Each structure stands twice: as C-alpha cells, then as structure tokens.
Image 1 (cartoon, rainbow, N blue to C red):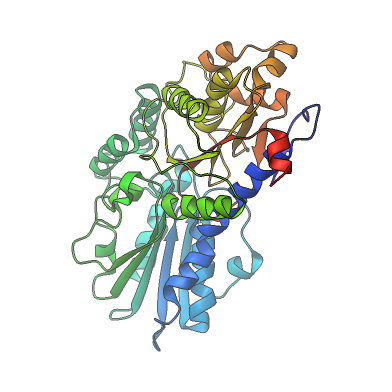
Image 2 (cartoon, rainbow, N blue to C red):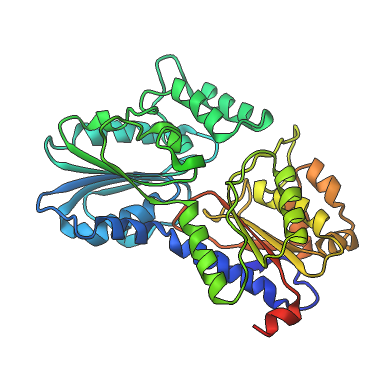
Length: 394
C-alpha cells in the first residue's frame, strides 16, 4: 500500500499513520481470515460444495478451503477481473469466473448460467456453503423473462445520474432478476444450505446485500465481516497509540460533498485526535465524468475545507481497493492539498464539477493504491487532527 503520484515536498509521518490504520482495518475484515474463523470447529464429515460471489469471493472461498480441505469437493467462484491464486484456480472441482463490475456485462449473464448448472448438479442432502460479499449484484445476473443486458445496464446508468442509494438500486435490481430477492438458496433444493456474508451495505441487512440474494426465511446465515469490525480494529489500534478517538457516528450516506464538509467541521471543532467513519456516499455524475470515484471525490471536497489547517488530514478509501473507474482505493489529503493542486494548474472546485478527482489527486501525490484486498465492507474515512511534532512525541 502506498501513496501514488508526485510525493509531497516533505515526508509526513501522519500519512504513514493513516495508511497503517487503514491496513489494520483491511486485515480485520479479510475474507479468508473471517470465513476460516467462522467455519473452524463446525466441520462436518461429509462432502461439501461452495458457491462464492462478490468482490471478496476468492478470499472467502480460500477460507473455506483452509478449513474443509478435501471435503470441499466442488466450488464456483464469481469475481471481478483480477488475479486469483493458482492454488485456488487449479484446485480439482473448482471453477473461477470473472464478470463485469460495476456495470454488468455478457460475462455476468454467463456467470448466471454457470450458477444454474452448478446448482442443478449439486447432490441432494449434501452440504452447501453460500459465500456472498458486496459487488455480487452486477457480477451475477439471471434475468427475469423479457429482461436482457440492455435493461440491466440501463438501470445501472440511471443509478449514477439519479444518485440512487444502494437500497433503491437493489430494489430495482430484484424486479429484473430470477434469483435476487431471496431466491438464490432455492436453487439448491434438497441440500443443507448455509450462508456466510461480508457486508458493504447499510445496517448489514440480508435484504439489501447483493440485492437480497440471501434474504430467504429460515436460511442459516452468519455475518462474518462488516465495516463496524474494521472500524473497531482501527479504534483499538489508535487508542493503543495514545490517540483520542471520537465516539462512532452513524454510517456515511448521502451526498459525498456534504458528508466531507460535515466531517471536516467536526474534526476542526472537536477535541478528538481521530474520527473514524464507514459507509458509502453518493456522487451525482456529469454527462461525461472524468477519472475517479466517490472516495476520491470525497477527498477533494474535504481538501477544500482542510485548506489552511496544517494539523488536519483525512483518508477516504474503499476497502475493496477500487474506487470508481480507477485502480486506486482513494486518497489522503491535508491542509496543503488544495494549494498543491493550484500549483499544478488544477482547480479543486472544477475537478468536483467534472468528477475528475483522480487526476487532481495524482498530481498532488495524494492517491492511495492498495491492489486487491480480499474484502469489501464499503468505504472508510479516517480524519486526523495532529501536528507533526505532537505525533513525534507519542
């Protein structure tokens, strides 16, 4: 994990502190670790099958393999583009497919067909694990009669321009699907089905996660990872470093610029050293958006409010390691970010209007790049008030 772009003129240990706290957050909700912990001690003697879908699908499946070993005879993984460990991809009985995200594509439809075939071939009375994480809605499509890829893509495009929140979007997705809205488990009729979830949605509701794939009455399911777990780990680590951590606020939601303004105001006017937030905001995109995502947009908005405050910094990053259409997780901004941008001939207000936050943050040296993380619990914002000299004394 590193900052990307032009390095600020002086090394800042506070940035390394924020990166370290973000690493701790990611480790706390690692898909492999969380599934392994959930299954340990609950092994059964019989053969098992597992289906994993979402941004954490490969990591969650690896956690099941760690515990079940040869008893896990069949597996299907549906994940976004990216590398997967050879030990998983080449495992006998295991199939790994990539599909479109965040916009569904032809591969999303192929993934749906693969799921139907996998479920039909599952032995009756066998054990089945459903491993679901955020991002599954676009990756896996089994459309309702009369619905095609054009309708699915049109819904996604409408969600961007109308700023639909995740609950609104997923309700619309359910109406276009044969398996969303609690109908996934029914594909494995006659099997002993249980589900493990890593959530990136508000309140971690099964009715919302992955468009309600697991919202089935009576289905045994367990939440094995959420943004609260990540933020709890950050708060503990920060307290051990002697930082005063503000009480947890409600999860982030709504307009990204409004949320950034509020958090910066609370940071500047409060007494705590660190404010920790999690959730997902929304950004209204212009007709032709530029490079970036909601975390980078959030960061540029925050940079305008942090300007002139040398003791304030803020990290905004996605726990999946991907922000919007970029390959970066987010950014760390400080009281000089806006000035550095203007020195590069860039205007923060203009970047926000054009949804071109990524280019500005690369120029200022503020982008955070993680690569694949093996999890997805939404976005994390860490707002720090600390003078460099104060940090050095801790």
